[in-house]
Length: 398
Ligand SMILES: [Mg+2]
Image 1 (cartoon, rainbow, N blue to C red):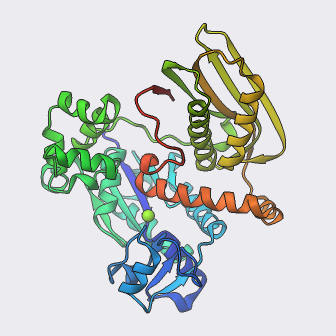
Image 2: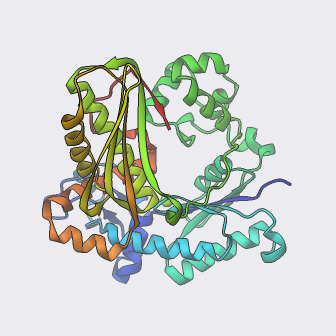
Image 3: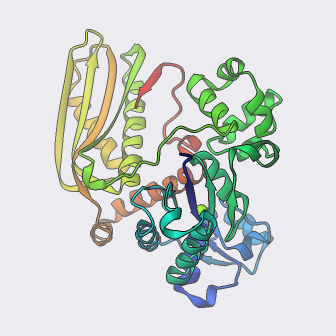
């Protein structure tokens, strides 16, 4: 049976949330992000009225205000957006248990076979869209196809309040003419590499020989991008129940053993960063932080530390992991490093805000995490890295 996948994407999510909370902001050009007083920072989200004036996400605030001086700036309130996100996700659960939350404002639903209960896909999508708009106040776009990538691409095609079908048979007309940068997963860096090769559209990427593409993007990314461009995506909709997750970790094997302390430090930061991101995406926090060191001779050591309170803050994970490493490294060459968190709690929003206000430095660190997560949710994980990029020496074991 052909799958029926819905991708539900909230439109201008943060800005829409603000317009729900404060009715005087409705139909106004509003910008979320930055500091209203100093006018520093970047645009995290803009309402459609602001977008119509040429304002886009990640634009520096001063530039946005030059384009649209009458724009109203609102400070981001991530706890509030999470609350609204929670409401949306709970509402989607009424339609199917097969829901995968992709980011704060997006989810994939596997609706295969649901037409017998709710009606035709178009009617179901309209029902979902109306219910979210009426009960929560947020507009969304829905893409419908037979897999996740096509549904995602479809949901991007009409905003706000679109319902778009993108089945494999219409790929050449509807998907291939688009700019290659529009393909989900193609970041700015990949876009530049592809354009240098003369690949400007998703269609030319789809027809490009995979072998040559691998030389440009690396095997893993090349295969994925090539399949996506051809509308192929075997990934199932995975329901992540935070209750089922026991630990979250990340490790890397190095093709050349590591001995340089500065290099090791950067690797530990990269590992901690991914673990923090995964914790926050899964909406869990953990108390016990552990590291794994595998030496050139395969001797493996794991060590852990338990904190008084659970955390999902990247910098806390990093500092603890680095401390554990320094205490336990025998100065011998390292083949593999791992960082992880266990002793997990599902996250309670009230708890976080209490915590955050109790500790100002921690609150700052959380804000940094939120800002980075936001960009990654929009543009993919690799859009930025805190540490200098370490090239060529490692492969990741997911
Ligand atoms: Mg969105």
